[in-house]
Image 1 (cartoon, one colour):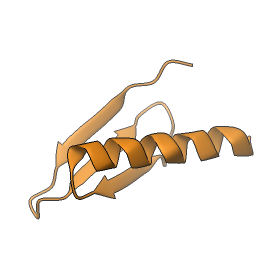
Image 2: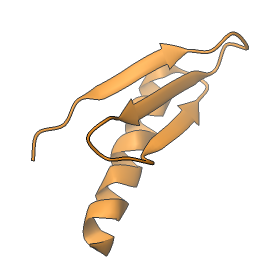
Image 3: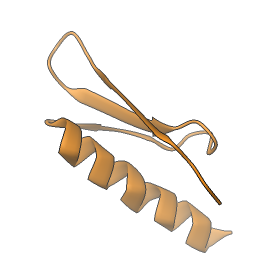
Length: 50
């Protein structure tokens, strides 16, 4: 499965990362890198639960 990570900086400075191909897989992080790492971890958990 190929997925893309979309990131965006919120007005309060936090970063949000989501994987559009996986509804509900969205996380916040203090940095863009942290948000990317956390969203990949969440995606892995979702895949393992299926």
